[in-house]
Structures are given as structure tokens and as C-alpha cells.
Image 1 (cartoon, protein in one colour):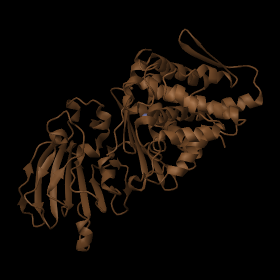
Image 2 (tube, helix red, strand yellow; image 1 turned 120 degrees about the vertical axis):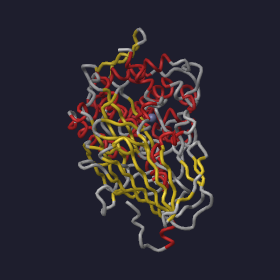
Image 3 (cartoon, helix red, strand yellow; image 1 turned 180 degrees about the vertical axis):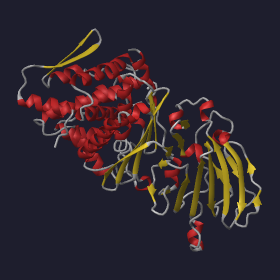
Image 4 (cartoon, helix red, strand yellow; image 1 turned 180 degrees about the horizontal axis):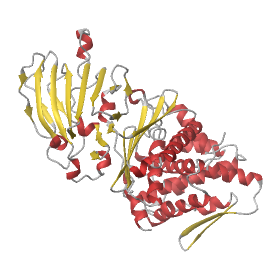
Length: 504
Ligand SMILES: [Zn+2]
């Protein structure tokens, strides 16, 4: 089970200082044994209830919902009503409710059974640590569910999964699964994990699709504030997608068991700006009538989380020691992407660097006594790990550009890792990062690692920035950066490279 990330809180804190049935039908018995169908009905008359029907030959006698909602005694089953199990002839099978979102059948049926239940969309009346953006909620234009909040499971390794939706007239549904052609709202998730880690939005929202080979980036947009900026989202999605693919050399390419066919980004207007990623799905809530900073934060969340489809899912760390690389390099490319597509100009870029990152880095209580390799501390030491990691990326980028006449940069590390680990189960460790950086620098980087990564010395980012033709200094605790008037073409290229463009 992939970890669910909610890293936005510190960012928000900074901002507050200044958002059918069984189609298996006549197929062979063997085929049926490995087939599970979910039919999900939302009726016009009661849009806040989802009726789910599962048809399958059980693999064992246990029905369960996946992890989460631990604050409720009955977890996700708090919202499940009228659970019934019947055999193919319609005879009811008594099922024992074990609480904790577990149910036990009296035996393991050898024939097809039907499990039916309702999910009441009432999650907003409970408290959720990560916010409703990772749970389920209703809007005036439709309903948001996560797979974990809606679906009951049995066994594992289903070879053939199908999900059909029956929806009110005029509704559509956005999911991270491949469509199958024979139903208007029919899908074929490629495995059970793709169900467990899914997000679903059904309603009258707007869908935007961006394809690159077999990979699809799908945006689901809802609410007046968001729809009014549809063109902005369109430009952002295609711009960031192209930028990342050009940088890496291809679309996300995780391990074989974890294929990403589609990345779903659901953006709705809501009460506060927040974001959450589950699997390859990103849920963003944008505060209604939010200020420009709330909008910028929502874009930042998208670009950051989307980059993790490469840095994090295509190349994956073996342990916690490289969270500064996972989060910090992701922040570096998030800023570069937003600058590249024109969502940040130079001054906004420098402002974000100081306000969001440098301030939190220098204020982090871990700076000076905690190594940024303590990745398990990343939520308590956001400034050190997310911010410090960004400054490591930037310092190394500058150092490599300087050493190679701007022909190499950390872009090459990204490409190398993409090639080496993409589509495999291999994972990298901190020594792999150090070795690649040493090769790119043409010089051993163990002192750099000893001082700033394993060690606890503050990284003098202003010194690194200053060698590029930027005027960078720290005054009264503020990182102040300006572009000098007189720049050589070489300096201009270096600065463009650091701020936005990909190195060929
Ligand atoms: Zn992250």
C-alpha cells in the first residue's frame, strides 16, 4: 500500500502569515473465478448515496475495506449500510460483521455471489486529519469518492476487474482506469491496487484529457471559480506534462506491478485550499474566492505531486535517507516547471524561494542539529527536508553547470535515474545519488554530502547563486536575489537553465 501524502499544511501555515451488472455471463468457469465486477449506482433521487453491487466467486471468506479512517471504530464501514450477500440463486448468505470494516462469510462459496451495499456520503460530518480531499465529499455539481472510502474487497490478485457506473442523466464519471467500450461509464482497472488507490468524481464537471503515448493526464474540474479558469488549467496541464516528459525522456514508468495508465487530477472549489495524492491521483480543493496565493498554491500542489509520478514512483527510494532528494528535487522542478510555463516570473520565483522555502529552512529547529537524511522527520522538519533538499538541488545544479560549461546539470541525473530504474523493481539509495552527482560534477562530492546532507551545516545557497551572475545575498534573514544588469551570454544561459529551461 502506497503511503498517502499530505504535505501541504506547512505551506498553508506560511501563506496564512501574509487553500451492471456482471458481464462475465457466459465465460468459462476458470475465467469467472478470477473475475470481479463492481456496479455502482447513483440515483437522481438520492445523489448522496452510492449503491454498490459486487459479483464474483470469492477467493476466501473475508470481505474488507482498505486502510484509513482509523479514527472511527468501524473505519470506512461507518458509512456502509444494508450490506447483503446472496448466492447465484438469490438465496441470502448470512454474513458476520466483525467491525473494523471486516465481514466474514460462514464458508467460502464455490459459485458466484452478489454482495450489495450502500455508501452514505456523509463523511463531511466527521473529522479527518488529512482533510476531505483524501476521503469523500459532495458538491453541487457532483460527488467525490476515494476507492478506499467506497469499495469492499475480497482476496487479492484479481486478473479481471470491471467497474460499471449507472448515473443520473447528464452525469459523467472521471476515474483513473481505462475505459471499456461497451458501456457509457465502464472501466477496467488493471489490478486491485488500482481500485484501492483510486479517486472518482461523478457529476456534471468538466473533463480535460492530455495524452502522451499510452499515458493520459486527466483533469476533472468543478465549481465556478475553477471552470472560469479552464483555459489556465489547460495550459498548465499540457505545459507541465510536456516539460516533465521533455526533461525525463518519457512519461511516468513505474515498476511493472504499479503501472500508471492514467493520472487523474480532480480540482474542485471548496472551503479551503488543500491537496492530497493517493496512488497516481491528485485531489485539490481550491478555496472559494481564494486570493491569488491560494491559486498559486493549488498550482504548486499539482506540479509537485505530478512530478512524483517520476521522482518517487518511476525511480523510488529504497529507504528514508533520500527524502531530501525525493521532496527537494521535486520542489526544484516544480518551481522550474511553473516558471517555464510562465506561471511564475523571475521575481515571483525569487519571492517563492525566499518566502516559502528559505524562511522555513532557516527557521527549522532541525537546522544545525539534524541531518536531512532523517527522512522520517519530513513532516516535523518540512523546512529542513523539503526546503533544504530544494537548496541542495539548486546548489548541485549550479555546481555542475559551472564545472561543465553549462553542458550538464541535475537534469542529467533525472534522465539517468529515469532510464536506470524506470519500469523495474530496483530502487535507489543515497550512494547512487552521490555517485551520479560526483560523475556529473567531474569531482568527488563526499565533502558536500558530509557537510550539508549527512552533516548539519546550513547550506550557503546565496554563495552558490552568486557565482551564476545573480546578485544574491542574505539581509536581515531574507534571501534577496536579483538578476545583474551586465550578463555575459554564458551567464544568461546558466540563469535560464537554473530558473526554467531544460538542458538538452
Ligand atoms: Zn512531495
